[in-house]
Length: 306
Image (cartoon, rainbow, N blue to C red):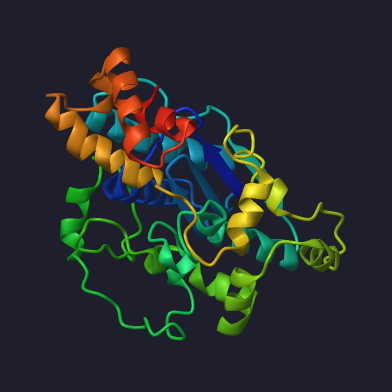
């Protein structure tokens, strides 16, 4: 079964406004994996895009199934209609051991590249902490829901592997869902895993992938982030600069900004969702937030759906 790097995006509005949305998105992905007989090696959800490495015969059906389930729940929650995000998705077949390592590493390094976390391990909405748990001092399995309680946290038509475990918060436990063994075998050791996740982008990545000798184009940060780099407020130099930083570089993240909008501003003006705001209300809120917080104009448009 072939392996792929898959990415889908939403340039005009955030797809995930808070932690609960991230959990629903991961659960939707899990159900889609089961329905399409696919497997996930590694994944990361950022507010406006998703990267993942998958083993699947039907990448299009996998992404469509996950997105449709999530969009239906998002629309119901936020009183919204219609598709969410760009219709198309990015697909790149992974061929070769070193190509696979590069794809896994770039997926897990996505949050630091975008300046929303200090390290891959500091970002909760990805699978970085699912691997080499014993070496990381995280071998103990947390408390889980009884299997009979899992369906109450899922849509009516959701399907899942009965061996998967779910945390009391209602999200599937990543180590029970992902193909952890394949990822750990690819890296070989925690030392190698840690090295690749801290390794800076450069020509060494290309030269290493050339050793696969299969004719596949090397995966680079630029090619990996191609679906996201079309945004005006994201550039390759930005990603490289974030990669070299030892601290979170985003002045305020989309999640933090959406939290202010959704929990403070919208209730104060008597609305239930950002999608109920008029254009004039959104502009007034954007102007106010721009003066009070270090938010960019593109970021405000994205979070306010302007």
